[in-house]
Image 1 (spheres, rainbow, N blue to C red):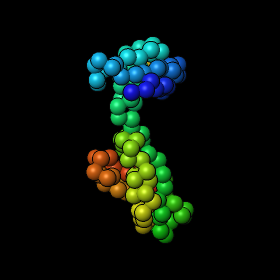
Image 2 (cartoon, protein in one colour; image 1 turned 180 degrees about the vertical axis):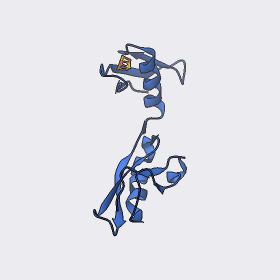
Image 3 (cartoon, rainbow, N blue to C red; image 1 turned 135 degrees about the horizontal axis):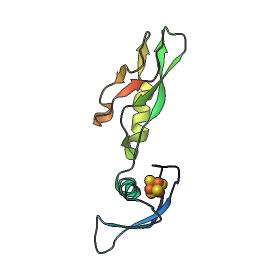
Image 4 (spheres, protein in one colour; image 1 turned 60 degrees about the horizontal axis):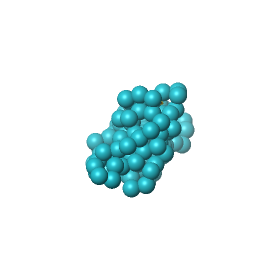
Length: 121
Ligand code: SF4
């Protein structure tokens, strides 16, 4: 597998790590550029199963604004981001909505819920 560059986002140092799977030990990574253990854990996650918290908006009816900002309550696999965006784009809600209300439960079976990030009357 090719070497990847991964920038650690866990602290302001933003270490640039070069990460590659060991040819003789699948599942094991060789890496350089990290300055601490957390960076190593982060690189492992980013290399094998990168995840992201998704933020978006959904249509809201009878509210003071036309769209309601939302976000996933936990990161989801990066591979599912496009499908998740499409699923969220289909959602429509009625006002009023309170910040923290669940707009979509268990998004694409990931266990992540889509929550309202503000209240709208
Ligand atoms: S590897 Fe450690 S020191 Fe470097 S950015 Fe990540 S958390 Fe910060």
